Length: 89
Image (cartoon, rainbow, N blue to C red; front, side, top):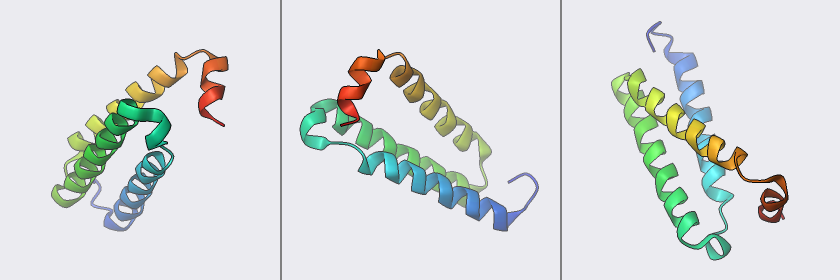
Protein backbone atom coordinates (compact mmCIF):
# COMPACT_ATOMS: atom_id res chain seq x y z
CA UNK A 1 0.00 0.00 0.00
CA UNK A 2 2.72 2.43 0.92
CA UNK A 3 4.45 1.82 -2.43
CA UNK A 4 1.25 2.60 -4.35
CA UNK A 5 1.62 -0.72 -6.19
CA UNK A 6 -2.09 -1.14 -6.75
CA UNK A 7 -1.84 -4.19 -8.99
CA UNK A 8 0.06 -6.26 -6.43
CA UNK A 9 -2.05 -4.83 -3.60
CA UNK A 10 -5.17 -6.06 -5.37
CA UNK A 11 -3.70 -9.54 -5.86
CA UNK A 12 -2.61 -9.77 -2.22
CA UNK A 13 -5.97 -8.54 -0.90
CA UNK A 14 -7.81 -11.05 -3.10
CA UNK A 15 -5.58 -13.83 -1.83
CA UNK A 16 -6.19 -12.89 1.82
CA UNK A 17 -9.96 -12.73 1.29
CA UNK A 18 -9.83 -16.12 -0.44
CA UNK A 19 -7.85 -17.68 2.40
CA UNK A 20 -10.23 -16.32 5.02
CA UNK A 21 -13.11 -17.67 2.94
CA UNK A 22 -11.47 -21.09 2.93
CA UNK A 23 -11.20 -20.94 6.71
CA UNK A 24 -14.91 -20.12 6.92
CA UNK A 25 -15.80 -22.91 4.50
CA UNK A 26 -13.80 -25.44 6.50
CA UNK A 27 -15.90 -24.93 9.62
CA UNK A 28 -18.28 -27.73 10.54
CA UNK A 29 -21.19 -25.72 11.88
CA UNK A 30 -23.01 -28.81 13.21
CA UNK A 31 -20.11 -30.38 15.09
CA UNK A 32 -18.45 -27.12 16.06
CA UNK A 33 -21.49 -25.52 17.64
CA UNK A 34 -20.89 -22.17 19.29
CA UNK A 35 -17.16 -22.25 18.58
CA UNK A 36 -17.78 -22.61 14.84
CA UNK A 37 -20.33 -19.81 14.91
CA UNK A 38 -17.90 -17.53 16.75
CA UNK A 39 -15.07 -18.35 14.33
CA UNK A 40 -17.35 -17.81 11.34
CA UNK A 41 -18.28 -14.38 12.67
CA UNK A 42 -14.65 -13.55 13.42
CA UNK A 43 -13.66 -14.52 9.87
CA UNK A 44 -16.50 -12.34 8.51
CA UNK A 45 -15.15 -9.45 10.60
CA UNK A 46 -11.67 -10.06 9.22
CA UNK A 47 -12.99 -9.96 5.66
CA UNK A 48 -14.71 -6.67 6.43
CA UNK A 49 -11.49 -5.23 7.85
CA UNK A 50 -9.45 -6.40 4.85
CA UNK A 51 -12.01 -4.83 2.50
CA UNK A 52 -11.90 -1.57 4.47
CA UNK A 53 -8.10 -1.66 4.40
CA UNK A 54 -8.22 -2.06 0.65
CA UNK A 55 -10.71 0.74 0.08
CA UNK A 56 -9.00 3.17 2.44
CA UNK A 57 -5.39 2.10 1.88
CA UNK A 58 -5.14 1.50 5.63
CA UNK A 59 -2.38 -0.98 6.49
CA UNK A 60 -3.25 -0.80 10.21
CA UNK A 61 -6.40 -2.78 9.51
CA UNK A 62 -4.30 -5.47 7.84
CA UNK A 63 -2.03 -5.52 10.89
CA UNK A 64 -5.10 -6.07 13.06
CA UNK A 65 -6.23 -9.00 10.90
CA UNK A 66 -2.74 -10.51 10.90
CA UNK A 67 -2.75 -10.34 14.70
CA UNK A 68 -6.11 -12.12 14.88
CA UNK A 69 -4.93 -14.86 12.52
CA UNK A 70 -1.75 -15.27 14.57
CA UNK A 71 -3.78 -15.55 17.78
CA UNK A 72 -6.07 -18.20 16.26
CA UNK A 73 -3.08 -20.18 14.99
CA UNK A 74 -1.40 -19.95 18.39
CA UNK A 75 -4.54 -21.33 20.02
CA UNK A 76 -4.73 -24.16 17.49
CA UNK A 77 -1.06 -24.97 17.98
CA UNK A 78 -1.69 -25.18 21.74
CA UNK A 79 -4.16 -28.03 21.30
CA UNK A 80 -2.54 -31.46 21.74
CA UNK A 81 -1.94 -33.29 18.46
CA UNK A 82 -4.27 -36.22 19.25
CA UNK A 83 -7.18 -33.88 19.90
CA UNK A 84 -6.43 -31.83 16.76
CA UNK A 85 -6.57 -34.97 14.66
CA UNK A 86 -10.17 -35.52 15.75
CA UNK A 87 -11.06 -32.24 14.02
CA UNK A 88 -9.17 -33.09 10.83
CA UNK A 89 -11.37 -36.07 9.99
